[in-house]
Length: 284
Ligand SMILES: [Zn+2]
Image (cartoon, rainbow, N blue to C red; front, top):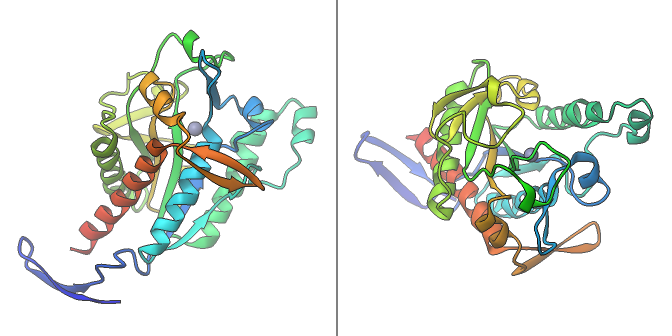
């Protein structure tokens, strides 16, 4: 629905925008990182437990964010794809086979990511948002009290090479991380040397605070689509861990209820608003 004549004084543009549906016509792919829940958390190592036994699973939180975000984006007029909607791998490959051959890393880092890329490419999105939460532990010790270093920032990655849509990916990432910072107070990651994302520091290039280029497998396989790989915040940070561990809300996934926090909703709002900001600016 077009409901207003829009005049932008700064640029002198005159056009019609749909204020109720600012994302009308936009195709958005959402990829919730990892898988989540047992036994996948144990297999991927993407979870932490604090001294009080509070457990946070990155794969579950990323999925909850994607499902909530999907509703918001649809309401604003977008067509949305989620690469997964439950706590199962995206690939049809047999995990047991990979395990038998000691290739479990290949299952997660190749087979599952390839399946995600294939789904995204098939959808032909205008924008792709890859959703992750960060932690800095490379060890097998998931108890947060034992972590030597803790990260506390937000950042987004754009593809490492300069394909078509590199600039758009930077602008999209800029808007999303700015909104996360605004909504949660979590600082933008300033330097490559910040703690976190332990396995990729050497291959990261700083574009600006909160936005970095990195040669990540999934983005490399998206064929130059506009994409932002967002590490929304560090869930091992004591303040964030506490905020994310509250159970104000819950949702059903795989026939089971999973609680989530107001902080998670803050992140959904922030990503949604960042996408709307991006789209508004691109249309000027
Ligand atoms: Zn992750």
